[in-house]
Length: 445
Ligand code: SUG
Image (cartoon, rainbow, N blue to C red; front, side, top):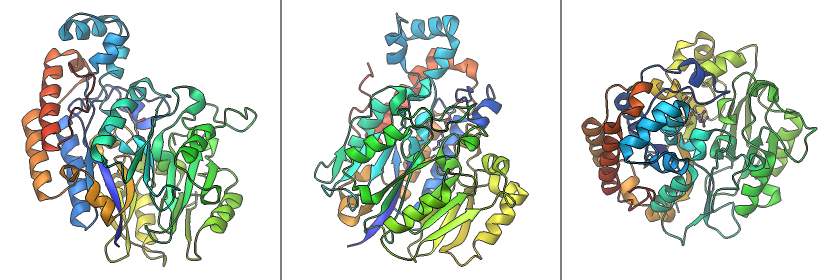
C-alpha cells in the first residue's frame, strides 16, 4: 500500500484584499489599505499548487468562501436588498464590512486540524474545522469550512468530520497552523505536536504581553480527544510568548515538521529541551532530526519578514525532502545564506524551491499557510472527491475561471461595490460545478 502526504491549498477568493484585519500579524497591519490583485493572488497560488503536483506530490484544492458575507451582515442587523445591505454597512460600520469581505479562507492551514488514520483509534482520518475566534473576519469561516471539507472528503467510511470547538476564547483554535506531525513514514503512527499560545485554565502560566495568543491548550487537548489520539502519541508544547509579541502569531511562522524532521527556530518554544526529549521518547524509531536555527544566524525579525519557517517541507517521490519557500527568503541575505547551508547539513532536506506568493505574503500568509496537509494511503486518496485534485486539466480550468471572473485590482473602497457580490457569486456557482462540490455555501440565497 502506498502512502502520501497530500497538500490541499486554498484557492484565493475573488475578494482578496488588504484590510489590516489581523492585530499581531505584522504583514497584515503594514499593508493595510494597499491595493491588491485578486487575479495574480489566485494565479500565484495555483502555480505553486501545480508545481507541487508536477514534483509528484498529491495536491488538492479547497474552494474559497463566499464573500462579501451577506449572511453575517444581515445577522448583525443590516437589511434590505444586497446593495442596500452593503451600502448601509459601508456607511455605518465600515470595519464590519471589511471583516465580512476577507478572502482569508485561502489560508487553509487554518481551516482545520487533521489526524491521519494511522494515528486514530477508529482508523479514520479526522477533521476538526478551526473556530478562529480570535479574529472577527476569521470567526465566520468554520461552518462553511466544514461544508467544503465534507464535500471534498465525503466518504464516511474513511473520513470522520467533527464540528468546530465552542466559539469562546477558552477554545481559541487556529487549526493545523499550530499542529504538526512527526513519523518515520507517512503510513506509520506518528507523534502529533500541538503548539499552544496560552492556557486559560492556568492563568498564572506565561502568555504574551502585547499580541494575542490565538491557540489555547484547552482547544488543542479537545482536538486530540475528538481525534481519538493516544496520550503516548501527543505532545503539547507552549509557544514562546516573547516571539508571539514579535509577530509570530501562529507556530507555523517559527517551526515546521515533516516525517522525521522538525525544523524550528531556537526561540520558538518554551521548555524546549524537555519537550524535545518527550518527542524523542514518543517517536516510533531512532532516526529523528531536530534542525534548530540559531538566532545568531537568523533573527526573529528576519524569520518573520522572510517566512523561513512558513515553508513546506515535503518528501519527494525519491524519498529526499525539499523546502518550498517564498521568494522573500531569497531576498533576505541571512535567510538565503541559511537555506543554502541547510541542504548541506546531512539531514533529509536536500533541495529548496522558491515560489512567488507575494500577494498572500502581504497579508502574512506564506506557502505553508496556503496548505492543509492530509496524510493518506492510496485507498483514501481514491476516496477523495477527484474533481478537487490538481492535474493539467484542473489547472487549465481554474486558470481560465480566474481569468474570466477575477479583478486585476481591488481596493478596500471597492468592497462596497454591489457588483462585487454578483461577480463573486457567479464565480463560485461555476466553481462548485468544476469541483463538483454541491451546495457548500449554505447561506447563499
Ligand atoms: O489569520 N491574515 C491571516 C494570515 C493567516 C496565516 N496563516 C498561517 N500562519 N497558517 C491571519 O492573520 C489578514 C487579512 C487582512 O488584513 O486583510 C489575515 O487574515
